[in-house]
Length: 328
Image (cartoon, rainbow, N blue to C red; front, side, top):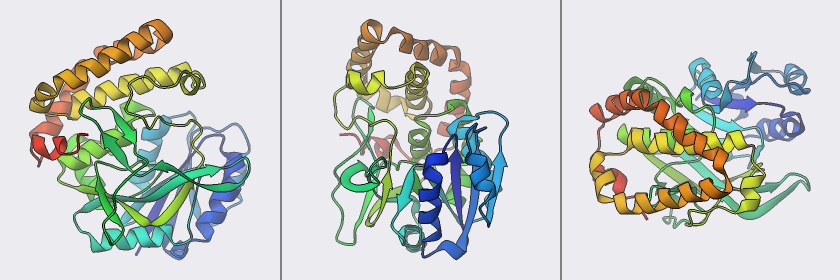
């Protein structure tokens, strides 16, 4: 069974030796179709890739961002299943094989990931600290990478959606999502929140997502995501970000909410949403005013987002409760 692996690189040289060592150690390695999309790296990333055998390389002349670059890989892929794999991830040797087996045995499942723990890259140390066990969504519509999850006896747990750092997707489900909305990942997102948006759209397509505790990957996330319920992130973590990242993240959060959510859910949970968004607004106003540009960008693109919303909701296969059941 053919499994496509999509790897996005941008100045990824320091990670690639570890990444490819992990890939070549996979028990399913001989079934893998490896597609690397490089976003115009200016280090030795491309030189390293050109030394590798048995891979396909797409060399972009500009940085197309996470969403559009991964879409290039999706378009080229021929596997029944497609693994989105960040450049800063290493895996258990049976990670891909076990997840592919999971999808084969669960026809209702469109996306699955293993436990993703943090990788201390600088010390080359695998930790037991959770990076992500899938997405958790609150009544306020804040979405986080959850660090706790109750698994069934067979080691599986259904989740709202999975993080795309090391997630295996059923290609047929991705094509169904594309048929409904016109794209795999939304190319207008650039980077950030695109996997949350995809999680919503997989739900609208009548699909399910799971996390399996039977396998583990390790992720050296360059910035630590918040895993608290509070609207206000730590100043330290946000100050480490490029301001453009904060702007894009805020814009994409608002776009995801408006594009995918049922009007009835927005109405019934409006008090939670309003309080959360108001807290964020004043936080940005006084401590991060440049991030409010994301609100302006969201408003400027509202007509386009409205068209996408209409396309999704006209063809949805679910009811509002199928999303609201995930609210915490």
